[in-house]
Image 1 (cartoon, rainbow, N blue to C red):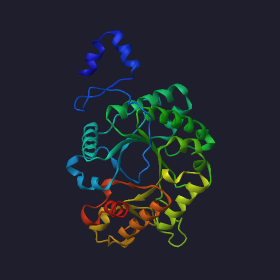
Image 2: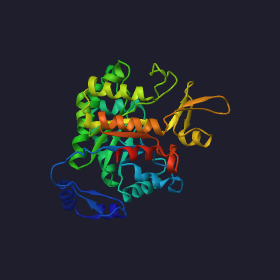
Image 3: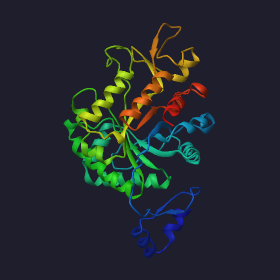
Image 4: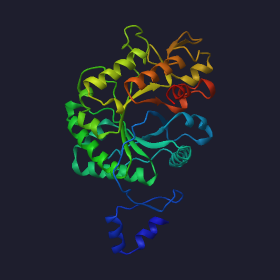
Amino acid sequence: MKRFLVLCISPLVLFTSCEKEVIWVPDGYGASEVKKPEGEYVSDQSFKRVAYAYHNNAIANFDTTKLDYVTHLHFAFLNPHADANGNFAALTNQNNFEALNKLARSKGVKTAISLSGSENIFRTIAANENTRKVFVKNIVDFAVRYQLDGVDIDWEYPRSNYGNDVTFEVFMNELSAELHSWHKYLSMAVTAGLFAGTVKEGITKGAIDACDFVNLMAYDGIGTDPNNLNHHSSYYMANRVLDIWLNDKQLPAEKAVLGIPLYGKSAANASATFASLISSGADPHADEFTNTSDVTFYYNGINTIQAKTELAKTKGNGVMFWEYNQDVKGANSLMKAAYEVSK
């Protein structure tokens, strides 16, 4: 209804609204219009506990108690449209996203939308000045419309051999400037950076500088720990990933958020959620479990979670979890273990 009323008012009022950079929001989201805040934007430097959650989860299946253990909830995912025109594809369940967003905000958790999708689509949008500007505007409008605290970019991955190191940096700087003008944060999820090459070099210092914090995906690394080749996310790997980003990539420690999995993997790369492993009899304090089919899964138990959180406190400024609903409920929650160490 509000959009209908906007169309009916005079062009003069429309011009005035644009000058004041007013964005209309849907019914039920507080004020009917939102104006840019005044004053300088100040980035949050506190220790973060970030969790990604699928936006289409129904509240009936969502463990709300675990919201007490996180500071940020990133909804996955909002994808660019396949036409690469700077617009978005529709969310798979808009109503669930809105309900979860309201719930998290009511608990004092900061919320963001995470953007992912085809590498080729991102590449095409970022390389064109016009579509890039449309994309940035649409991202910011979405964040303002749903009263999100920020935006997360999960472009997997910018590659230097396609010139993405240049276009990604330009895109991130343009997006950062607009979000910060609305006092909203920008983060990105990035490769573990364990191997030299175009993916590692696709993230530049300029792109890092544009972000408030960087989520380091220190998992899915089978074969990276010489002492435990089958483990996809060992403590050794976490320490190495932090060192690479802090030293090789010049990521400031206050922006470094260590990624931690809420799932395990077998040596053959099969996945199982932490919740399913525990229900099958795994020890919540251990790091591996062999099931009745004689398949061993390697995961992060409570002890490793706490050790990694201590590591993140020493070398970085936060931990990040994928994915919220893969954790167990109750006393053995891995997010709870991280919370107890970092609070």
